[in-house]
Image (cartoon, rainbow, N blue to C red):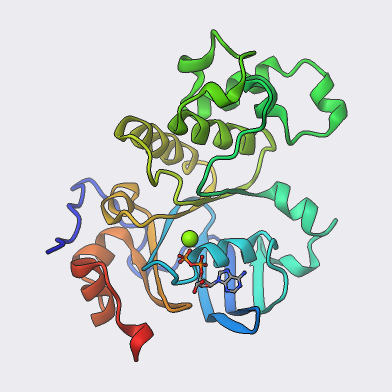
Length: 269
Ligand SMILES: Nc1ncnc2c1ncn2[C@@H]1O[C@H](COP(=O)(O)OP(=O)(O)O)[C@@H](O)[C@H]1O
Ligand SMILES: [Mg+2]
C-alpha cells in the first residue's frame, strides 16, 4: 500500500484561497487532440509568478502534452494560454521567441556531442557563442549545481558525464537563455539519489525568482518541493491546491485514491 508522502513541517501555505496574488500563467479551457485523439479536455489553472507548481498524475494523463502546449511545441489546441497577460498565440516574435521565455527541459537529458562548456552556450545565437562566455558558463553551472563537479574539465566531451550530471547540464543550458519560466518534465526520474537531491535543491533556489512547473511521478518529491500542486488524470485537471493542504486534506475522492494507491480510475468512467 502506498502511503501519502511525508510533509515537511515547515511547508508554508501560498495563500488561504489557493489563488496566487500575481498570476504568471493562465490556462483557460485548453483542449488538445493528437492524431484525432482527445488528449486534453477543458484544462484550466493558474500559475503564480514565483514558486514551484508540481504537475502530478498517472502515466498518460497528458502532463507532457500540457508542457508542450505551454511553449507551443504543440500549437494546434483550443482555449487560451496567457503569460503575463499576453495570449501565447499572439506572442511578439512568435513561437521561437516564446521558447526563449519559457524553457522546457525534457525527461531524457540530451547533451550535444561537444564539450561541457559548449553545451551550456549551445542555444545562444552564433555571435554570442563566439564571444567569451566564461562568466555565463560558470553562473549557469553553479545554478544547476554542477559547477563543482565539472569546473576542472569544462572542455571535455559532455557525454562523459553521468546521467544525473547530464540532466543538470541540460538545466544549465536552458538557464543560459535566461528564461523567465521553467518547465521541467520529470527531471529526476531514473537519477541517483544525490543527483535528485541536487536538482531539487537547485530548482527550489531558482523558484525564489521565477515560476517553475515540474512534472513528477514522485509524490514525496512534490511534497518536498512545496508550492502548488496540479493533479491531472485522463487529460483533465482533477484538483489543484497548495501543497500542504493538497496532501493532507485532498478534496476529491480521485485525489485521495491517487495519493493512496497511485492510481486514478477516472479514465475508466
Ligand atoms: N503524438 C501523439 N499522437 C497521439 N497520441 C499521443 C501522442 N503523444 C502522446 N499521445 C497520447 O496522449 C496521452 C497523454 O500523453 P502524455 O502527455 O505523454 O502523458 P503523461 O506525460 O501524463 O504520461 C497518452 O495517451 C499518449 O499515448
Ligand atoms: Mg510524460
